Length: 215
Length: 215
Image 1 (spheres, rainbow over the protein chains, first blue to last red):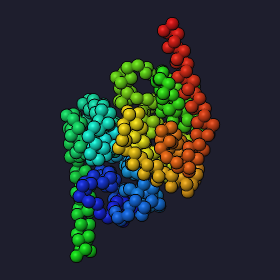
Image 2 (image 1 turned 120 degrees about the vertical axis):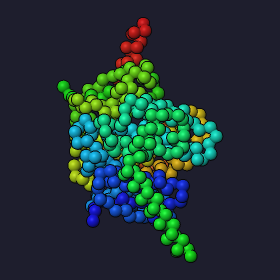
Image 3 (image 1 turned 180 degrees about the vertical axis):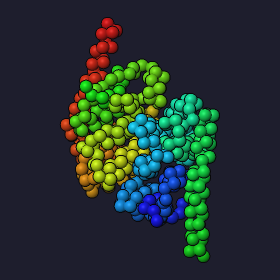
Image 4 (image 1 turned 30 degrees about the vertical axis):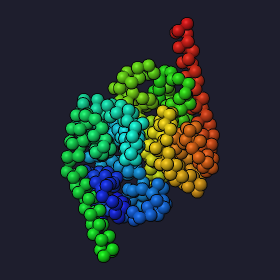
């Protein structure tokens, strides 16, 4: 029995399946060989139902024994400190990994997610498009010169950056071959496939429960 | 002579002065009593001139002896691990601080900065306004119930969240009294005043050098 628990919704609609951020924590545990279980909170009334555990009403959060933390980025940093597979133990390798984890969250996702939000809102003239293109160009330049973001090896920074970049609309934003190859390389890892398949199965099983409850 | 070096631009226009993110690292060093020096890279040609040290052409970055890291959030995490003033040493206090640091970067600033970007771009109907209002409401609810974000004391998470929230347009977004009192409380700390005054003096001195060079 593991002390690590990844908390996610009991159910979500089709659209976000395969992209709910509990996948980041599942994937990290799979890479590191860390035993974990998955527990759920209700999707219904999520805006107000679990604010004491996640102040923005979102998922995931992570339990590790008595510790509990929200924000997938914080959970990922916590897991990275538990496993050298996710982050090197030497100070230079650690600093390199952490800076790219933060870059994924605050330099790329800070532009790509609001851009995507405006896109799905039906914005005709997306005011963030130029900025997103510039950021993706910078990432392309980095990935054109090397295989992994940090420490010359796979780290939790690649896991997170690939998860940020694999969103279909972001991938479709432009022809960036090094980035495309990178996303394919990182998401081709067995731990990603396992985590994604497990998330899809989790929500598919919830469909059956909902259907049975309604029938 | 300190090993800690905060790198920033040699000069910036009036607009961003007092808000350039080297302030986050100066402030953290001042809070923690960590000796540091400030060095500069040219503002001119920043888009391409220092990509080997900051892959998005931005500042700040932080040197600590042989270590160098970009992303102000990564620098802040690094400094927080050096000083209990910035982050408690117990696992629960550390997890609480880290989750709120990431929340400032990836749940608040991920919305507030793109919203502000659209505002200064002259967007007539800012498509991110509703989302920003919702996020700020969640923060208001948290701050209405307690004085500090994490661990019942000032931490690096307050430093960062207050820096994110003090942007004038974000503060003007709505009447949220607990948030307003929080920003006033955190930015009323002497270490913030010192860091801000030092940044303003740094860029003012650069005006004189530019003027002398031109004269």
